[in-house]
Length: 340
Image (cartoon, rainbow, N blue to C red; front, side, top):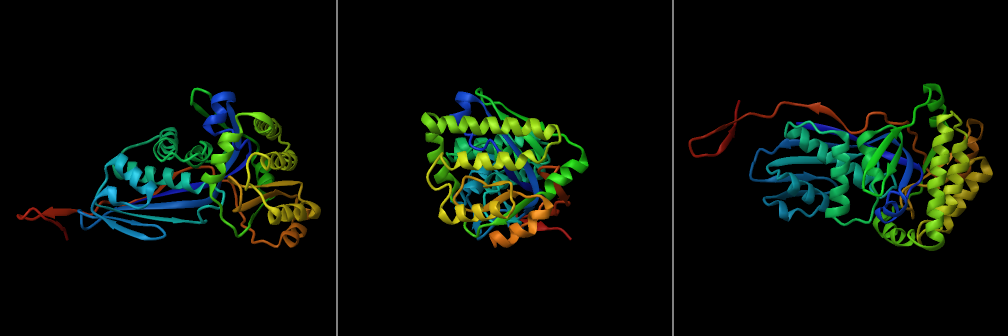
């Protein structure tokens, strides 16, 4: 058995600039971090080598990869030509919560398959292959930041270039400063999931012309400004950047926010939050706020939503368990039999 653990992510600034329609024209820049909430993928040889079993929110038992209903599983298993296995997916958070779940899943499954095949694979390879599957093969109108955040882990500036290259730059700061940054970030679950593809599809078309393109450029500039301030240890700049980015992001496409979310945000600001944003494409999921310690209880009372404590993840996708493959012997009739 092989088990991989792959982190979800939080994007602070620059989101949307990782979409191809934008970075092909302007280059893109995102500041994000992986967090200690994970997707776990376990893969094991199935006793019946003619069947593949997939367990996620439902269970599929299939004899032909083309029969797989789960589009991500189907495309990944087709690309790796794997049969006769059982793969189980479990996660700390729900899909559609704005933490990059689809890309975390893709990176985690790819990592598990490479490990199962006995192959070493780099984080760059995992991220780029996940991008190819999600964007090129499955035609999802998403960006590239989530795949790289899940693969690499850590607090990073991720740059997206017009030629398609991606560069991950770790943001280094003293451990004590980073812990203070973590402690000033509060994450609340809105109770409403979203469809990232629908919103990002509109955003992808909007950010290449007019005022929306200019606003996306300003969001990139905010990411660059945040990078500079964090490198100086000025973590309190996070609040202002989050606030300005959120105001700009809401202009990029319909459905990013709505009245109830705006009300939650306004209550948090009045209670002492210095800035925040809805994570992911918009429409639901988790809201992030930057709040100094002395104001955090007031913000909890004001927003009245479940809070999810978190820390930064520093490892990225990792193989956390490797067990020996069960041994089989072949009978004279050609069938496999599990050895004692």
